[in-house]
Length: 311
Image (cartoon, rainbow, N blue to C red):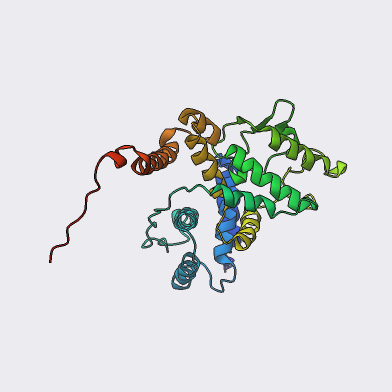
């Protein structure tokens, strides 16, 4: 009589295990470290506090609606949707899910335009950090650097001391840090050079060159979400909303208003082409039109049209 072979029942993997495989494939395919970190962050945020599993599609879909239903800017909503959809589509390809729980959820239209923070608000913002502390000095210098160069917050937070050449008044964004994967070198103004030098001078010597310039008081990397939270606290005191990307937009718009060249702006901001840069050009042209309507001498030479009210 033959023996009966019993096959062990394969337990379904957890979402953490699937996520690890997904990230490994992304890494092998050449995804940048920043992108992989963003995938991990958004997928983990979705599953935090989720009591169901991947086999309970309705519970998973409800959790997706809760997460995407949080009050966030359209750009943030679209970013979350993109990362989560990529993970779910990968699960579908491997037969884990039959359909994407985000299939019926459309992108949000982002009508938000870049804006320049008024100079008087920037002045008050720079008065808020307590430069007697390391954290306050760090915040002050980071604000100055973003206003001076338009550097992306994610790029600034990964800079190391060796990326600054204070003698030649330059900062180099390495290819592994740059969002586009292309290194670029930016000029920095003398006042910013002095404040960067001051910040570097108060670092503990044992931190060396591996600890980022804009780190925590304990030498740990400062997350982009932490920088957003810091500026959010400053915004409450100002009564004016300021975000890390508002500082970048402010640089770009004021650069053009002050006569900067659009091609120089493109290279400084690290745009692959002029498509993104043209957004700032269009806004500065609107500024010019408004100023022309207000200040043209023709206003004093021609009578204003008076609209007749019909009885």
